[in-house]
Length: 385
Image (cartoon, rainbow, N blue to C red; front, side, top):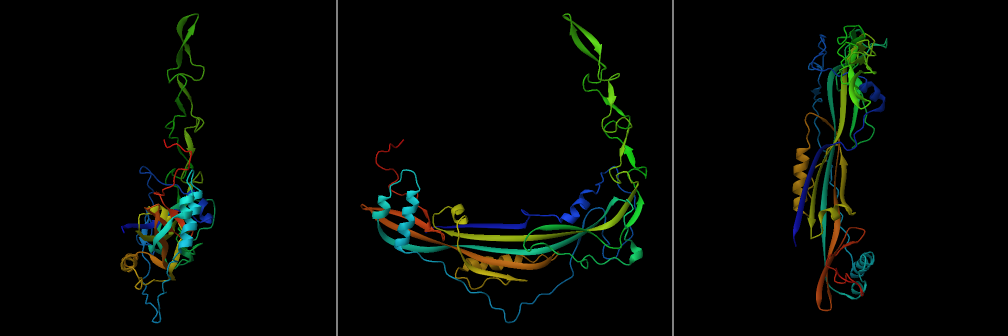
C-alpha cells in the first residue's frame, strides 16, 4: 500500500487578524511622513524604550523559565473505529445512488473478499504568542490631555496591561505608553496649519483638461475648421479643485491644528503560530481526506506542551518532537500551546462481482466512499459517448 505524506507549516497565520476597535480611529488618524518631511524633533531617551524611533523596534519579553509539573502524564490515545461488511455495503449503495446513471445492483450483490482497515494521521500544533514593539508617533493636538514625564516614569513595555479577546486568534492592539507625551509645533507646516497644494504646486491653477492647456480648441463651422477660445478656462488654466485656488491645503500631519502631540506607541501583536503534518495512506486523494471528519485521538492544551511520545506511529512522535522544539520564539511571550492528533479511519474493501475483482474505500466518520472503478457506471439504455 502506497503512503502519501504531506507536510505543511504555517507560522504567523493571520487569516483572522483584528485590530482593537477602540484603537482603530486612533491609529488611522496618524499621518505617515514621507522622505521629504521627516520630523525634526529630538526625542528624550525613555527607560525601557531606548531604541524607540519613528519605525518599530522589537521589545523582547522578560526571560521566563518553565518547568513541566512532576506529576505530568500525557493523555492516552484512542483508536479509530473499524467498520463491518454491512456498513461498507450500505455506504457503497448510498454513494452509488447519488451518482448519475450508476446502477445499484452491483453494490447490493457483490461479494466481499477482504476488509483492510488503516488510519490517516493529522498532527496539529499551535502556539499562541505575544510580541510587543514600540515607536514614536504623533496625532493632532486639539487640547486633549497630555500625559507627560511630569506624571512619573514610563512603565516598562511588558508592564502595561493588555488582554486579548480570544485565545489562539490573531489580534493587534495599539496603546499610548503612559508618561511619554509632549506637544511640539507641527514640523510639516511649521505651525501654520496649511501646506502647499501638491496638485497645483501652490499656484492655485491647473491645466485645463478640455483644451489641454492651449486656451483654444479647433471646431468646425459651416464646413470649415477654425480656432475658438476654450469656454472652460482662461488662457489654458482653471482653478485647482483641491485647494480651490488658494494654493494651500490643510496640513495632513496636524490637520490644521498647528501643533502635534508626540508619544511612544506600543504595538501588541498576538499571533497564533501553527504547524501541521498529515500522513495519508492509500490511494484516496489528499484533499478528500482533509475534508472529512476523524476521531480526535489525542488532544492537549498546556502553557507548554511536551512532545508526543506514545503514538503508535513513530513518524508522529518524531514530527511532534521537531515541531515542539521549533516553537520556542525567544523574542515573544508564549501564552498557551495546543496540540492534537486527528485520525481519519479508512477501510479498503476488496470485492468480487461475476469473477472480476473490484476495490473501493470507505473513509471518515461519515463513511464516505471513494470508488472511481465501480463497474456498473452505466445503466441499461445509456449510450457511451
